[in-house]
Length: 409
Figure 1 (cartoon, rainbow, N blue to C red):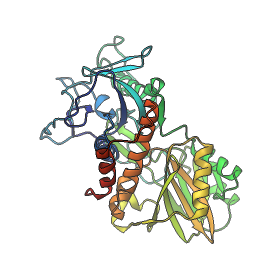
Figure 2 (figure 1 turned 30 degrees about the vertical axis):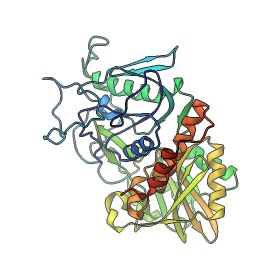
Figure 3 (figure 1 turned 180 degrees about the vertical axis):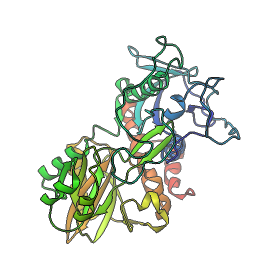
């Protein structure tokens, strides 16, 4: 996956906006190559909500200059629009005691901060592939945990030493993550890791697949029921081997015999029973609002490797699935989450929830803007709550909101 930014700017303001110094703004931070926040910022602009969108990948990129690494981005320079910030490095100052932020000379107060991962934490690596799935140390992603050579260079000097790009990326990631410290509302919410999710869902009485975590899937799989198995990574499906370049290790359906023939991967993985099911659902939770898509695919990795083979359609949320999603979102203090569920013989099986889940791909395949519109409505409500505004929006704002669903995908 290529998440390198094609924009020369690290910040985008809505076109034509005349910001009032110190006025509350919604802050949207993610990778510009992902389309969710571009659509959301446009929808919020039509609703009269001031926003600023940060491209975390561009902000963390090495500074331009003779010593900068060659870029694999397109050679044609993109054209800046009226909503772009100035070119070059992002100029940002945060005043912790006053709750104010200044970006490129514009001062505002964050009302809602929504940061979506993965944030830029790339390690220098030789381009390549990740190798066969769940094999030890193959491809550009391995071998892991080698001590970094070279020096960090003089402290706090731009791009000095081998560790300079690492500190730059890590510092921008930390800033985006902690920007919510001065904002009344932070999205998507607290969330939980995969194991905590499965344990929490089971404790709430929700069915989950039988699961083990092991460094030796072939041997440990004997403790699971007979039949097909699913192997997946313990954390995110992607690692960043170079700035903006993501290598994925996707869930795989296999069997015990195949796992026994493979060498152990050398790191802990999740092995689960494969649950035969009638329907797979992707359900988006947005502060109580629910939108679902029925997904049909030949394999778990098809959305990345063979998207044309994946069928997606909008569907009503079954009552039991709605009950499960709302209960778990409340337990994990989520305002937003993309829940993956199975419907099996009338029962709901919880697989996982991604608090940074994409939605524009599902919308495009299903021909809808329902999640984007729901996200705009949620963020607008949270922003107005921060402002303690109880008055209804002006007529133009209402009409704009009603027209959101008529925009082209």
